[in-house]
Length: 102
Image 1 (tube, rainbow, N blue to C red):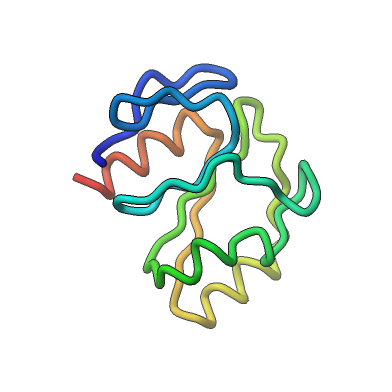
Image 2: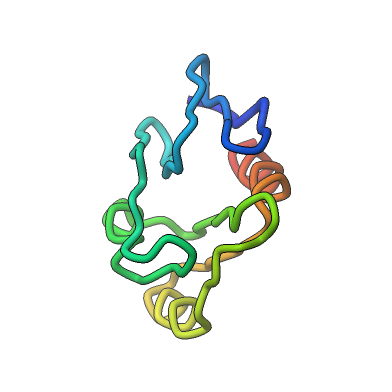
């Protein structure tokens, strides 16, 4: 699948496809649209699909302006399962994801 590219507000390219909705990318799979329980607050249920893939790291883009809230309880819950959650504004999250993929 490779890296994420051409990120701009409301758009990111994965491989040769442009996505205009929120998504989760895991190796060769994409979940899009990624619908969260509550638009601007992350819940652990929102990550069930990702967690089922047994990641070591989850990179979350919090939006262009950082509007997605991530409660500390979620970070702690994931850490207890051996999963590190890192979050950045989406532009930086794209860079972080690409670094991990490489």
